Image (cartoon, rainbow, N blue to C red; front, side):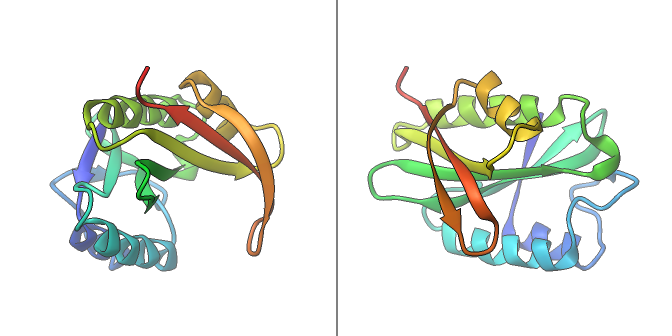
Length: 156
């Protein structure tokens, strides 16, 4: 299940504080630098979409994060997600992305969701495929190298 959080919540996590009385996993959700970057991203997106980020919550414990990375004028929203290392391979990300798809389908402004993964077989492509995403191409990212591009229509 996903639990909406704000940019202020992400800043609190970056500072090592808990959020919304939800127990934290025994390994970090992300580095302080990533959490600070996500907080800044949420500040820019919150004026268009709220929430702009969510905690993945399993059994009352925060096990990961999902966020909107960008919003295009055409109703396309790019998403990202990550799971605490000690909580991976338990289906949390698959369930969280399913929740994001349901959220997007309920908002008439959202035409499609997009995501990118490393250009290699692994958990992220499987998560997206399980949630109705299709691979639409690939590109070279300055920081990550070759990535696969994915899309999921929200009108069906």
